[in-house]
Length: 108
Length: 115
Image 1 (spheres, each protein chain N blue to C red):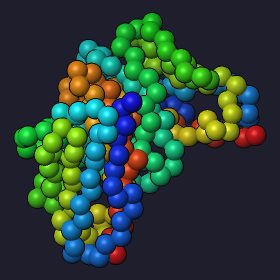
Image 2: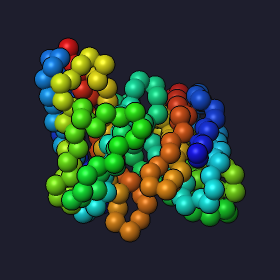
Image 3: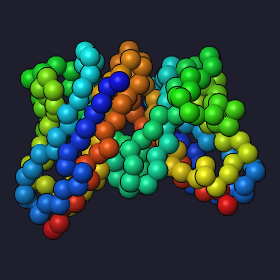
Image 4: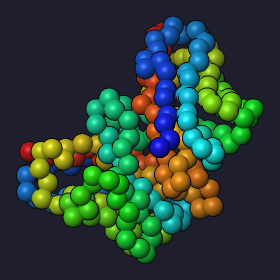
């Protein structure tokens, strides 16, 4: 069965302090890796889809990269509004398999 | 684009009653919708996959007679929690898959509290 492991579990950053979140996966034939952002009490918000090693996507202060075994979500110069739980998922045969998430807290 | 709504956002019901949650794709037609359950500080747990016009496929361990799913149209899926008990209290989230793609867009979730 596919496995998705996210690290760290929690990340506390000062405003402007860049950092990276890791998502490692074991899957036979990647058919898509997805990043979502989830705020407390809300549904996940779609951020990125990556399909092949070497692919990169950016959105504002977020940049997602993909290798053959892991993906990174880089947060550049974060702001307090970037505080959220970031979820990584891989596409299984018919469903998304989610990691446990990384909760990011950005202090002003 | 790709907006998914859920209704209600919060519901409180008494033990033994049934509750229906609606999930709608507002700006696209979704042949496949998914229902998830999320416990505090945990990730999403897939309950079932709903395909328009056919029976839902339930994940192992999910009682299909308790969690009734109907996907009657390309924009609407419903989850009915029958004979609810306090242990059914949770955050229920639906998602819809964009046609010909693998991206799923999620609704805002429904907080169910069974007293």
